[in-house]
Length: 398
Image 1 (spheres, one colour):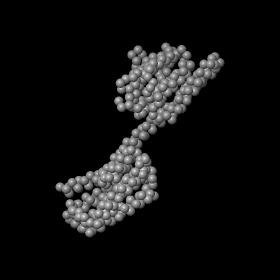
Image 2: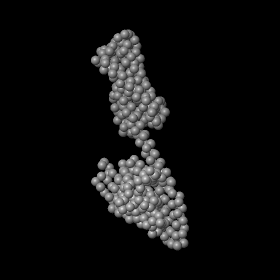
Image 3: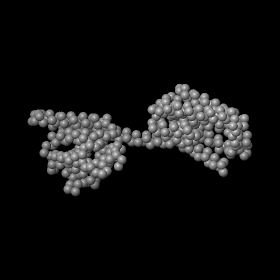
Image 4: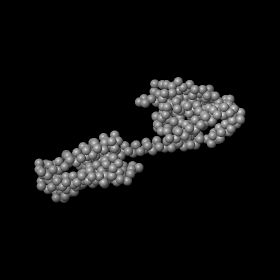
C-alpha cells in the first residue's frame, strides 16, 4: 500500500514538473535567466521523480540496478532546492552566478550528497523500499548539513527582505522550509500568478495607451474653429477674447496633463476641465449651447478624461444651427453603493442604430472605468428626447 502511494506521489511530481515546464514556455516576458532557471528547476524535478519511479519498478527484478538508480537520484534530488535558491537571488535582482552565498550553497549541497551516499554505502540507510534508517556519523552529518543549508537560506532571505514583493517573501519562506516537491508546486503557483499579473498589466497598458491616443487625437477642426473664434473676438470684444484664450489654455493644459496621469483624480479637477472646455464651446456657439450643473458632491475620485469627453460627445452630435439650442445638464448623486454622474442633452437623441457605430471616446471611457475603478457607463435615450449618459463610480469595498 505504501509503495503504491509512493508511486502515485512520484507520478504526480512528474506531472507537476511537466506542467511547470509548459508554464515556463508559455509565460511571456520572462527574462533570459529566470526562464532558464525555471526550466532547470522543473527538469531536475521531473528527472528525480522519474528515477524514483524507475527504481521502484526495477527493484523486484534487479536490486543492484535499483541501488545504482537510487544513488544517481541522490545526486539529483538536492538540485531543485539549490536552483530555487538561485531563483530567489535572481528575484532580488542579483546575479546568482557571481554571489558567494550561492557558491556556499552548492558546496554545502555537494558535501551533504557525498555524506548521504557514504551513509548508504556503509549501511546507515537501507535502500530497499520501506527500508530502515539507523543512526550513524554520515547520516548525522547529512542532516546537519541540511539544517545548515536551510539556515543559510533564511539568513539570505532576511538580508534581502526589502528587495522582494510580499508574494515572493511568503513563497520563499515556505520554500526554504518544505520538501523539494512543495517547492516545485510553489514556483508553479508563482509563475501562474505572474501570468495573471502580466496579463492585467498588459490590459491596463493597452487602456493607458488608448487614453493617450484619445487625448492626442483632439479634433483638428475644434482647435481651428476655436482659434478663428478668438481671431474675430479680438476685433469685436477683446475682453471676451482674452477670457476665451484663458479657458482654451486651461483646456489644453488639462488634456496634456491627462497624458501622464494614471489612476484616478479628484472629480473637482475633472469638473474644472469640463467647465474650461464648455466656456470655449459656448463662446463659439453663442445662443446655441446652454449648460447647467447640479453637482453637490465633488468629493470623490474618477479616471481622468471621463466627464469632459462625454460632454464633448453630446455637443458634437447635438449642436446644429438648423435645430433648437442644445441644453446639457450635468448632475451628481450619492447612493448607498457609490456616486452616479449623469449627463443629459436635448440633442437629436439616441437611436438603436447608433450601437453599431464606433464611439471611440465613449468606449474608451467605459474600458478605463472598468479597469481603473470598477465603474460603469450606460447610454440610453431620454423619454423627452435627447440622450442620457450615466457613469457609476462604486465605493471602495462595495
